[in-house]
Image 1: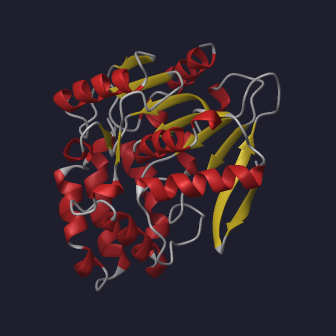
Image 2: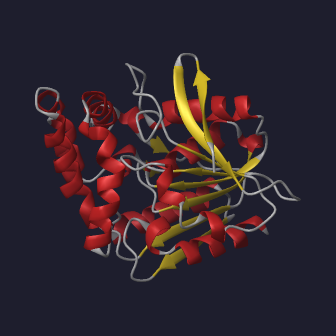
Length: 284
């Protein structure tokens, strides 16, 4: 797979295509905060055949440019995703988002409903009916409050702290540590540290626009909501409220899938099941 950099008004996003065109709409895969397009490596070969698949690195993540002052809120990421799709000639597509990427895809579906044919939300973050329910974990909020300190310290301090904060996202800690080493490698530079700080600032409680809130009947496409049963970032009560919010947002056109013995990083821990869930969604 050979990727390319797409210029969006002076900011470049890295993306690549997988699969081949066929009878189905394209599929767009969107990772979450502090990961990268590498998240989907196990899922890609398990997706239904006959679909062009577009995978990207969000601004400030992976191989994409640092934000250089650009907003890192969910809505801002969604606007850049829409611009990327315009440049790549992708019209109507199905979207799969993980973590913050799920909120980005939901924002895009609200912004451009005719563009989103189907939506798979995997272990969503920053997505709820009420802003208070869409916040990140208490540990991540504490990291966000310390951004002025992180900006004065060596980049390795913040990267190591993020590593510790994100490790519970994996059921298998040893393989999770290896994955985090890969995801966080780019944040161990000065530009990477500043990118991480910019993303953390968007999580601050005072920045309610950093998340995305669902409106009744705001989603006009079939939605599959997937939870890992062991996701430490999605308590049972919040999961139930999100499920109810999606039911209202889709007019009842949503299904819920549970993944036993899976934590937050479902694309890594359950690629077979996730590929099947996407396949089922594409038939709706």
